[in-house]
Image (cartoon, rainbow, N blue to C red; front, side, top):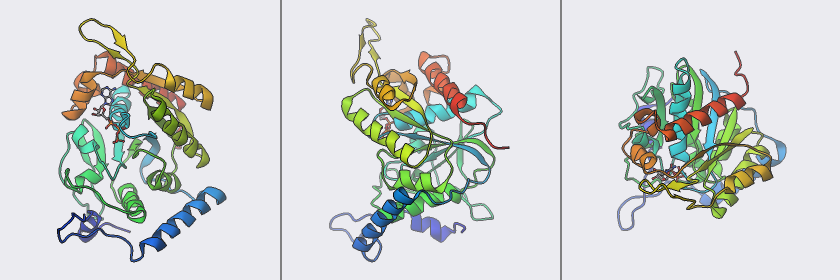
Length: 311
Ligand SMILES: Nc1ncnc2c1ncn2[C@@H]1O[C@H](COP(=O)(O)OP(=O)(O)OP(=O)(O)O)[C@@H](O)[C@H]1O
């Protein structure tokens, strides 16, 4: 099934803004669709997943997930994608922003605009810093809220996965939305995933959700490669005093409980935030910094744990 211009337009969410003439698209009967989804989910969980189909040209898919929002998953995904490419210049890397509700990859990768359509009506990814990127953010206004129901989200994800001309990629990094909902399930059931990385801060409330995330991937037979402990420590730039704002070793303790490893620690650092906000992620803008080195180290750990790709 190819994407047409009309199809692309249809992908753009319509939003109901109180008082205006807008509308919130939903299937004819939302109750029916909710029940359908619930039943489908239960079937999938209980009977095993339907047959997954690889994305043409993509050797290995890596998903970056978190239970809770705002723990730095997208920041980590962007820097890991860049680090995978920086560690080995022969490798080609793609980055898919599956956070259809709050796409942040366009800004972090300093990309803007609509993807072109190829002669086969596939969307061409936008490229920066050598990384092929695709995001719902290229199809909607940055400030437009996405108001979608489950089925529409799943259809959008299917299009972002299949109707993109990814070319030949060694790694496709997928930045998942937070939580354990339709998108996670949809991606896991659609394509073979070589490994998942769970990002969390050491804070109790984030750990609780990170645990759910790891357990969900195990349930759907996606190998969890390990955890990344983000914002583990803040060092005062003046006096060098270290503060563990979100706790000390929470992710390490969770990893032990789950029988997993911590792939690395990323401190809470103003340069990580600033560089991502300005579309110049630290791995490319300050490659000699300790922070960039930490991401490069995590990328190496990931490669070490990934199975040997087919072919
Ligand atoms: N190690 C870090 N040091 C400083 N700031 C960070 C760090 N990691 C992430 N941030 C900042 O924290 C904020 C949230 O990060 P990010 O958007 O990556 O989180 P997220 O988990 O993907 O959130 P969501 O799931 O809600 O999209 C951003 O402003 C980002 O720049």
